[in-house]
Length: 142
Image 1: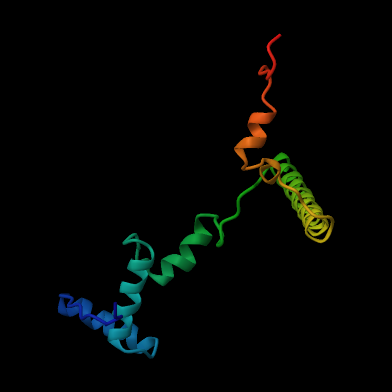
Image 2: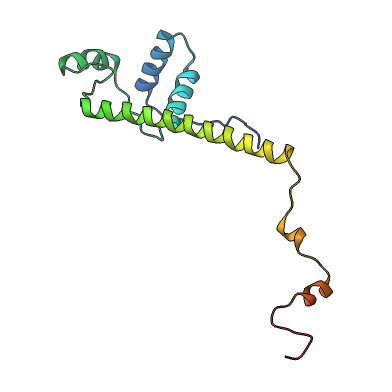
């Protein structure tokens, strides 16, 4: 798939167009860049963007007794639990590494050590040998 740019058309009133053009001139960017930024912002936030004038953004936060970025109080028990879980995860990672080293050591011992005899190799393919050692069969009558 190629990444081609597409054209989008907007219809705005003449008054709003002039306002947008003033915004673009204030920021020393093109009017197209204003629209591109707005569309990019819409896409990034799944269409959930609210346009707030700067004077409300700066003045409104102070009058509402809120600061930006917002602050949230977290209970100490939550922080302690988080720290405990971090320590436990570190311990489990160390244990995993230790087990990996142990398995590697065992593999090296098996590969570099004595000859390995598999049980399947001990089973003979000769049927004569198997019949000679059957339990419960006697050649002489009792």
